[in-house]
Image (tube, rainbow, N blue to C red):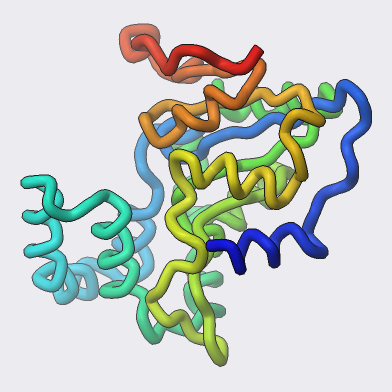
Length: 229
């Protein structure tokens, strides 16, 4: 984790903020989208037979998750290892591009697209911050015209090792990754959008937290409390 954060901080730090500059951070899955994007992507990339061949290896970890003996992060690490170990990174990137073109019109919430556009037009620095793999979300970020922070996958000699680098980008890790890329968040007016418990730390760090604002009204339950002053 420390190695990744140091690498991100050196050479990838965004332009220094000026007084009053706004950093607008959007969760992706469920916030800007109608549902999770990663599992459907795996089905899109590997096909029905490819997925069915891999599912038995996930049975025990999934049962462990249901009885709370396997954490969400551990289950995700296992999912990535089962599906992506040994896969050529360029092939996966090409599939991500095709997936973005295929599902864009259905997956993205129109209200979310308008929300991102509004922030860009206001002059804010805008980024996605998601637990989904950055390699998969990059085409979406490019099409939105925003920056991207996501879960990083290890690549060796052009192939994925099936390991996550720096941990799953959710919960407190979202705040750490933002700090590594942008510097102290207190230098910004931080605006954040999220929809699950994995976004609570991000929303609490924001001066302007937005909880499920792109969802139907009946789903806009109470979000995290005690946002930053």
